[in-house]
Image 1 (cartoon, helix red, strand yellow):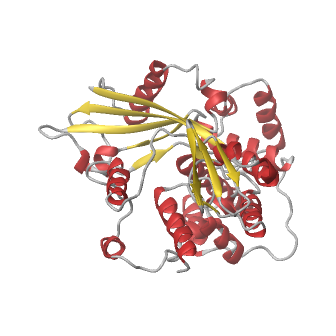
Image 2 (tube, rainbow, N blue to C red):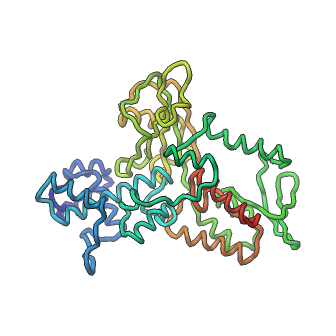
Image 3 (tube, one colour):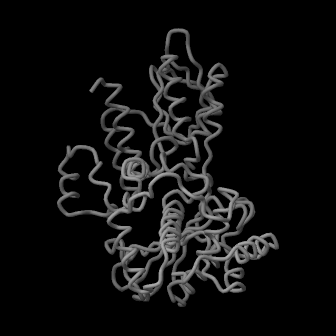
Length: 409
């Protein structure tokens, strides 16, 4: 924790060094301040244009229980801590946590993402309780009503994450087999080229080598893909879809012989001031030991790189080599976790435009899309990660809601 608030001279020096293209780590070393402090000053200047803390009108905001605990801890360590130092430290903490959270969930830049759309529970906590930090620990149970034995079991056993013994591919394989057994046709490797709205109220779906008719279309493709196949007379809708972007993420899987991980847990996220390219590392062998190799111990890690910083840090996704990505991931495992052994198996996957970015104003774009569909009575449902949640859980839940609306449930 800082012993005193940074002087204006130090803040100006941070900006001057940044203009000289100095990295945050080097600026911190030159000026003798924490990297998180440098990052916070740069972000404050970018978002507000100011270097001084603005005075707030009216009575000061009440602190939360969590804030109070942190304040007590600060004062115990340094009895001469001032109110300004406490306020600045709490704000920096919240910013760093949100920054890391956005990188871990959305591979996105917290300065560009919408809190309301990305983390609605935090938005509600800030709106009603006036504290994002409190929202992280005291949001309450906002999950849908329990309606299946599996959900009851997850609640009872307090699952924090879940997977399948055969990997997540098991989910789509099982769904495919289930609906095929009930007479549903699946056309694989058949990209939709165009959707034509018919006078009789249905769709004509153009595919390579022909077309097919449909009474209703449920679109789970990314927003950018849907924008290219909708009819020309839906331009207001297609324009909104084109405004919705997605981030590219490289995923590197590393496997090592033996138990070489010196820590325990699910994994760790890396705030942007520690380096743009590296987003975080998941300790797969600890999170899901059921997936470990049989016949001997091993350590599995998943390293995530790029996201909103892919082009600026790694270059053109079409040009970056797998060898470069593997080298960066292996180096991260060695420097951040002390795992310096050579991996016995590696998998490098480049996922282009894979995670939708719910940037500022996303909720307005979503409202416009759904309003347009209602106003024009389009037999079209929008599901998938582009709209109301990027996780597998979100996609399943929102798809189910759409189907229930169609069935009048």
